[in-house]
Amino acid sequence: MAVLGHRGKLWLRREAPDAVVVPTSAVHLLTNAILVRNPGYWSGDEVTITCPDGLPIDSGSGQPGCPDGHAMYAGSDWLLGANRAHIAGDDDDFYLADDEAPFYLRSEDVGLAETRSFFVYRDQLDRLSFYTSQAAALRGSKTDRIPLFRVDFGSLLLAPVGSVDYQNALALCSSELDLGDYRFSDIRDEVTLASICESAPAYQAPTAGTDDYDNADVQPRGEVDSPVDRGIWNVQGQLSDWSLNLTAQEVDTTAVGEKFGDSVKSLVTGGGQVDFLIARKQGIDRTGAPMSDSTTLLRLLLMSEKGCKADAQFWMITDQVDAGELLPGDLFYQSQLLVTSIAINTRATDIIAGSLNFVTVGEIALKMGTN
Image 1 (cartoon, one colour):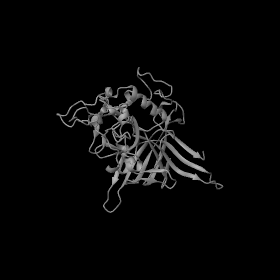
Image 2 (cartoon, rainbow, N blue to C red; image 1 turned 90 degrees about the horizontal axis):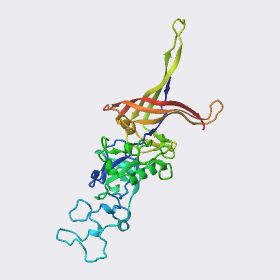
Image 3 (tube, helix red, strand yellow; image 1 turned 180 degrees about the vertical axis):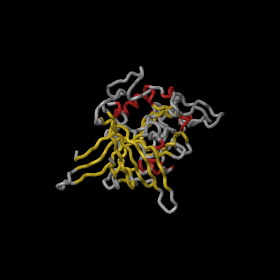
C-alpha cells in the first residue's frame, strides 16, 4: 500500500544526542567557541553546560564564575584573577603588604557559575558557540556570542536540555564524579556519558538512587532524555511531495500434501521517498508549528550512531471539520525512520532540489480522530 502525500506534512523529532565531557583544551577563545566532535549537536539546539568548579562564562559580576581556575602568576596561560592583579611581571612582589588582602580568589568575589542553558551554533570546524536565543544561534553572528574566558575549569559536561529527571541525573553525575577521570575512556572522541551515567545503570558505583535529586535510575529509561512535552516536533519544510510504502510479508505455512496454499503474515515494514528543496530557513508553518528546513534531512543521512533515527509522522489530514460524511479529526502514520540515500539535483536553470529514500524502524501506527 502506498500513501502519497503531495503537500502533505512530515513531522520529525530527532533523537537527543549523548552528553559529552569537554576538556579545558577544547575552548577556542578567538571564536568564543568549544570544539565538540560529536555530530549530534546542531545549530539551534538548546543545551546545558555544567561544571562543579565553575564555567568559563560571566557569572554576572563581569568576571568568569570559576574562582579556582584563575592564574596565580604573571605570564600564566590562565586569566589572572583580581587577587593577583598586582603581579604584572616577574619583578613584582608576590605578596601584598596588606595582610588582610585575600590570597585566593573566592566564589563570593567573582561568583560561581555551575550550570547554564544556552542555544548553540555549530560552525564549519565543529566548534559550538553559545547564544541566549535560538534565532541568534541559527544565524551564528560572532557579535552575539556568549564570551568565554581562559580559566582552568578542568572538564565541563555538555548535554541537551531534557526532562527534569534527566537534568537532575546530569547534575548528580557532574557533582559526584570526577569528570577528568573519564577524559581518556574507550570513547572515540569526546567522552559520552554512556559509560558513567547510562539511563539503565550497569555499574556498581555510584549506586543508582530513586530519591529526588538522586535519580540516575529514572523510569521509564527510554524517556530519560525527553522533555516534558515528549520532545520538540518540527514540521519538515520545503517538501514538494512524499510517499510512504507499507508492506506485510507473508510466510508460507502450507503443509505437505495440501492442495491449497496457506500463509501467515510476518513483518510489517515500510519505506518511501521524500522530494524537497535545498534551503536554510527559520520559521513556522500555517498552523503555528515550528518548521525545520531541508538541512535536517541532509544531516540525518550522515549520522551513524545515536541521532541517526527520527520519530516521524506522515500527515494526510489535519483537523478536518465534521461535515456529514467527512469525519472530524486527523489522519497520519507514525513510526521512526532511517535515511538511507540522498540525491541532489543542481541543474543550472533550475532550483537546487533533493530526493531521499528512507526505511521505517519499529512499530508503524495509524492515528486518526480528534483525540
